[in-house]
Length: 300
Image (cartoon, rainbow, N blue to C red; front, top):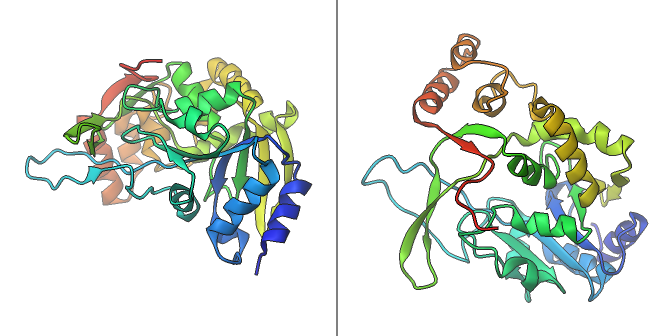
């Protein structure tokens, strides 16, 4: 059983301190069984950063492609559960938390800057605007768990949009409850990527001193990076060669075919697939996807 005292000690050992602004990616299961669950970890983090600090996590909601006229609409509200995991949803339900009003790329925050970071993040905002603000404020990325559960660092998403990298994406979105209580539709209008490819930049982060600490939180691997440094390294390296973010999976549609710099054509990708499902998805992507650069139609 992992106690609050152990969590506090591990966070202090990792160099987390009063006033820190933390971008959290957490696999609770990797930590081990925590006494009283996710709330205990939140309480431990808040104790270590104090009243001047802030914790943030993405609290994104799932999108769908609404191609059929009679397809059932799920309406997103501020209480809609995030797919980001148990820790994120515990933050959403924690007393004093703030959740941004963006219909899809919601963030949740607790602490001194929670309201400031989230209140203006809405349908007209840059999807990853909260993370960009944290870069400028000197935030830290905190990854808790294995790479396959918490891939990459959040700043990569900011960099690929700021560099206006071009990608073909399926028209996905959500129906959401607007402030006037009407139901509206919001479609994804920004590029995204395969988180497993984002990890390719870790050696650059290490060599340029962006990795602040590697250790343990309970039983989980803990990695802390400087958000300002990771962002500027990503801007430099991806401007030089955007293929840095491509993973090595032969059946990854995102990496193999969706980007303007991907290493396969749809035809060559299909020739190498044995899964009928992947073949169907690739054909569907080729027919229905649209080109995007960075993020379109956004107020910054």
